[in-house]
Length: 506
Ligand SMILES: [Zn+2]
Image 1 (spheres, helix red, strand yellow):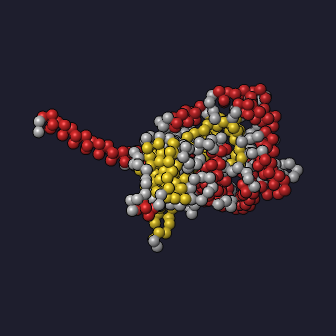
Image 2 (cartoon, helix red, strand yellow):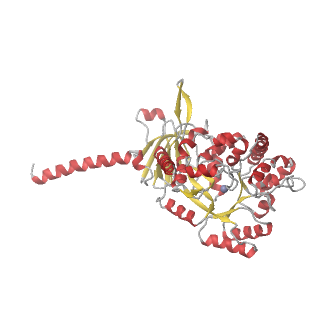
Image 3 (tube, helix red, strand yellow):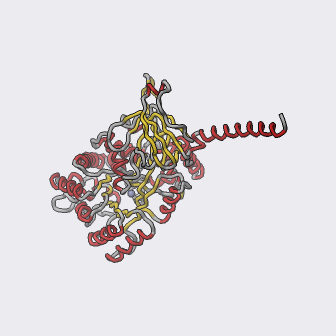
């Protein structure tokens, strides 16, 4: 061997071993988690595409950069004999045999909090919980300049977070005239907000706001409260989606106003939540039916956020969520503690009577939701977590369970959280489906969520397999915009944030 030959041989060996190291490192889930890859292949998956049609498989799904480029079915027997044509290897190959792939979930009502009780935390506490719960897109429901920054950092993949659509908060201080209201809409548009989150304002101001929003091409999500306006105003002015529910039964009360006691004070949180629990029973069924039809006709969607009131019908269930052990940040724990000055932390003296009213409230509410959906109404899925004992991400999965409880087939529930949510944001041609040409937003699930939505929780669930009780489930990968996030890696990072904050707060 001449010197140059030897040099080349050594270089080749070095190159091969470095190359092997490099490839092995790239293939480890922790190493690739959160990194953009050129090509990801998900192999052998059973696919629920989000449209409401039944699951089917096996399929190989090819992702190139941020887009789904191929979905190829194959015959498992032919594949076992090596006779099936399968896609070429990717930078990452995910074995999804026996697993379910769904479109990434969309959270139509999220809050990207970065502090609670005046104590800051890294926003990744929230955004990584969202990703770990399969959420690839969030409609942020009270956005400010910081949220715009998180949105842009998520898009640039410098923040591990779902895709964010920032809906600017409305009203703001000193909006008392139609012209001030219109100016605020134009300011939000100019600042780059994707839409408007309306809390409540008087009817004439709402009219001006909605008119200007239409002119600016901005969608409006409306927390339709018990105010001067109700769902009929949303129908008339063309609200994109009603958030929560109050304004719907409120529009169906004979006599026009709920039968409040004379000492009722809307700013008293105990009053507000106690008597909200008696609102649905006062709605006249015939009038309610007309309100629902009016919403359907005017294409006003409904995002009920059933989950965020669940503590009202079963306080102890909400307060003892097993996920709190590992995932409840101490600042959020403090915020949840009953304290009349924290919004939604009103449970001082909450009684069996309150819970009984609320259980009836839920029955009527769920029936109205089911009627709305089966008559053709557009239903979305959101969580509103960060309030009332609801953990970010976990709340959205619980919301899926509650839509099933309302009577919807699990396939329809998945559609609510994917295709419907995307449509409500005006993005139905880009996200929300497992389809070639769509954004690569997918989740790979250990288990069948159509059988049990609890398999989506990062904490998993107990199940019987081959006569033995095993702990399983959990999402394995959340792929957002083509970027694979390894869920066990994400949850370990969140637990680390929580345990660090706990030891610092001691
Ligand atoms: Zn909210």
